[in-house]
Length: 252
Ligand SMILES: NC(=O)c1ccc[n+]([C@@H]2O[C@H](COP(=O)([O-])OP(=O)(O)OC[C@H]3O[C@@H](n4cnc5c(N)ncnc54)[C@H](OP(=O)(O)O)[C@@H]3O)[C@@H](O)[C@H]2O)c1
Image 1 (cartoon, rainbow, N blue to C red):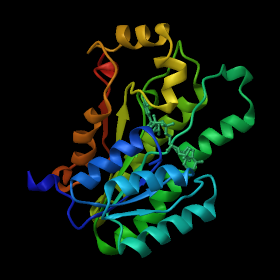
Image 2 (cartoon, helix red, strand yellow; image 1 turned 90 degrees about the vertical axis):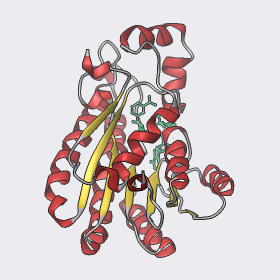
Image 3 (cartoon, rainbow, N blue to C red; image 1 turned 45 degrees about the horizontal axis):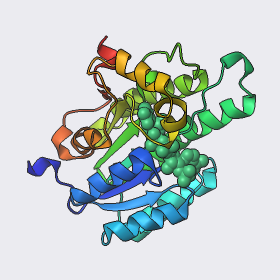
């Protein structure tokens, strides 16, 4: 089981102020990593850092800002000494019919879900390639592999499809120099992103239950194993892979 440990590794987790990101930070920290937490809501990051105690740093950033992304990676390497793992988890999406979706919303979705993770992959990889070691885990979605119909989330589907193929290409491009890139495609998990539109509604809960072969939504802890596998040396021969953690949604 030692291959799953992350002692002496530094992991940067985006979107660490809520939902999956909080869980990912706790899991990586629990496996021994020093974690660098980022998101816009600094108060949330500080609370999580206080809970984790040691081996943690907070670097708030708005990931739609290219300069902020550069400062983030520079600061992470500066405060923690290196960067071994990047978890591109921050995400955005609002359900709306495609034909009436304001262009500003499309652009914001692509900025947070595609441009920011791509740029962070570049910035992290420059450092990782120099050291010959690194693991990047992108958080995609089942809606990067199939459409969301009857739910109307077209720009979100576009963005998650992009991160899936980004993962495949970068996973191949950097693998001979020690940097692996993989993705997790979660199914339905209760977070701020999904609470109001799905979990608070009886129809939403029923929809998830009926359409997920395992018969229920995921629980956040069920992402720990997949994340630690992809982040650590346990997956040393895995790159460009998209691991669905979806209760069978994509297997139907
Ligand atoms: N929940 C699910 O069922 C599910 C399913 C499939 C995929 N996912 C993916 O999982 C990831 C995490 O989502 P979640 O469900 O945990 O949603 P969430 O609770 O809404 O978390 C989204 C995170 O992204 C951060 N973020 C958003 N815009 C940002 C920006 N401009 N700059 C910096 N950070 C920003 C938010 O932090 P601040 O607001 O503090 O900046 C927050 O920490 C996303 O990529 C999502 O697409 C979730």
